[in-house]
Image (tube, rainbow, N blue to C red; front, side, top):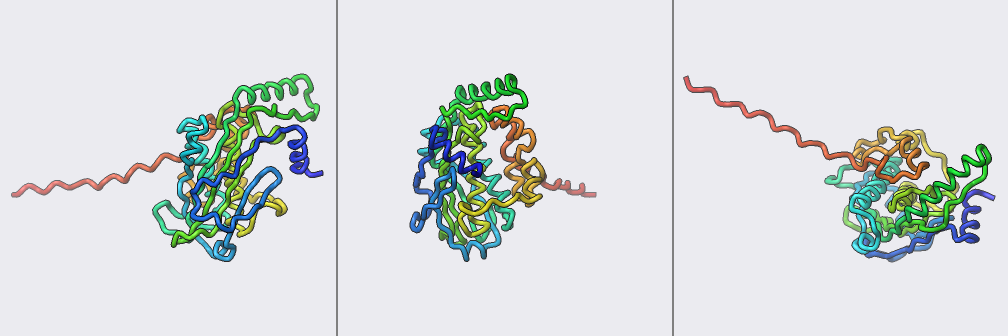
Length: 291
């Protein structure tokens, strides 16, 4: 039995997975034609105009935002919401770079892409901390013994997102309403309320990017090996396209270590790159004194 179907069965038997609603928050220009397309752990409804999406060459990203309802319902600080939104934008930029040219926010593009977080459930830091202690205890008491230690199935976070791609006339060409919860078997317990939502943000971006890159649902297809470019970026290297530098570099090795130790996302993710300072005006020459 493959790993993810096994996880799904375990979730059903142990209630070890959080759920995320497929909220229709009104951020899409239309909800017509959306059809269910679920993954092993993910619920989604999607639509895509395959011919038009595959014919597009350029993409402009609009900054991800939290819906008013989602921001009010979850106990994330503005800084935590910002780091989650930027993580989505950065992962979208990296994923879409596989096929599209990414242009600046003020430029025209064949497709304009935006995501809106419609729901987020916070991680319980105490439960996450207890899970971390259990894993440490196992490594001390049973060193070298390959016994998995499931995360305590309490206080698991979740995330729901709407994503849309529109053409130059503002007409929807692809859309996804997406929801996924953390689980006891593959989700790392971070001692921070935004821990699970942050980790799930890149899962959404990977799925939505794949929808646009291939013109087909990302669910149900055989997984593909990551390219050398994507591995380089994942490890904190420079992105394939310079426009993606606006979202900062991936946390890389430090991020993997921090995730394993249960550190809050802000400890290793520095967020968006600071804006470039404006170019200095050329010096004004003084008029020569009259002779």
